[in-house]
Image (cartoon, rainbow, N blue to C red; front, side, top):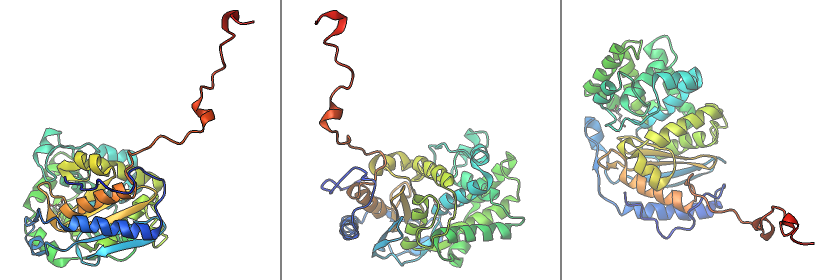
Length: 351
Ligand code: GLU
């Protein structure tokens, strides 16, 4: 990954954001650096996604104070795709608790593709984590609701609370993916055969396909991310969506698994939990500070937005967001000195 961010202003977490005009300047620089990149390919395995404008690019930073900073195409709508997995996971943990979801779905990286069937077989039917399709389908199956329709409404309503507005289904994406999601249907059937889902697998995949087809823009993603950065309270609407503990669990899962097989590389370069989707969206969460939402549909070979990663890498460094970056704290001379009692008098050598 070309992070292209050597001459940035600061590189360690400050505990708070710089003043708004400085954030705007940094956002502009992040955008310009990423905009120079034209590599990557728009996803086409869901046929309708291939129609996206490859040059569309928007970045939005939403603070936990509710202030948004936007640049570029932050109002262009696209399907949320895999990014929904993060928020449905949070909703399910909120309802069922940390342990139950840990037992059923798990949190470990599979090291295999997001839609791998082999990963299920290698792990005795355990989905391993909620950011791969098997784990996400198992998570959606846990969503409360007597019927598939009720589950879908709970998903839509929950994700809408994260965004602070009612999210709509992109019917064209839903149809296109429904016509081409044989692999996800196979995954759901396999999970059922292992007793990992106890609902009709076709219904579960249908709800999952709809959740992936929810229509968002980069500004929505930034607010959704900012809600996870703000201990579960949407900083724009003021509504509590999930608990602080659920945010912590969700961010840990994203840090380990959010960027497909490049999750380790992402954490190494950017140092923040994030989640990408094949339509070109990317969310990143700086706990206690900001959520970042980007949209740029050209993807790297792992399925992550190229420009989104480059812009976010710059923001992470320039805004001092990397959760692993520290600097020694300033010490007063008194603290620098050893505080143990002097031992010049030891063993009666003096006086
Ligand atoms: N709906 C897509 C699938 O299940 C999501 C893929 C993604 O964004 O990674 O294949």
